[in-house]
Length: 178
Image (cartoon, rainbow, N blue to C red):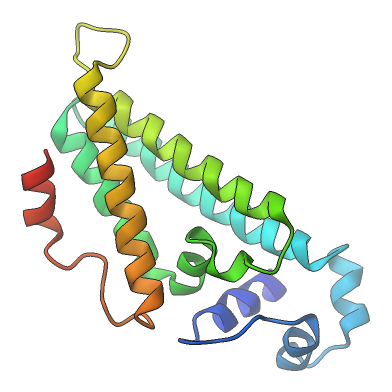
């Protein structure tokens, strides 16, 4: 856990370059061999971060789905939660948008792509009509637009060195889209 927390912390540094196992080991004051006793590879360390992101976010998505009525309000709460998660975890945001995964194994980026596919699916379910088991075309389009919006906001947050908060004008933006 300490390794993953330190890795996430290193990713929070604006403009930080690729995190190497040597730099991670130095930050933890251990040898690289000690890192590899806990993780088979650096990719496995990033998988640990992705697991944390998925578990945290989808637990909250499920809680929102249980508490809120279907519709625009439920979708807005999911988007707000994603944005708040990103603001509280800037290092994880770099993983979510793929910046931290550029020189890593391609399957890591594929996992993050699947993450956003699942988010879009959850938003489609939020926006479907109560009397319909399947989302309408309108719900599908809105879910896709909301997902692209979130991805764009997270990208801007990471690329601005975490200065441009993704929650900036969030309520107004959501009211326009929903």
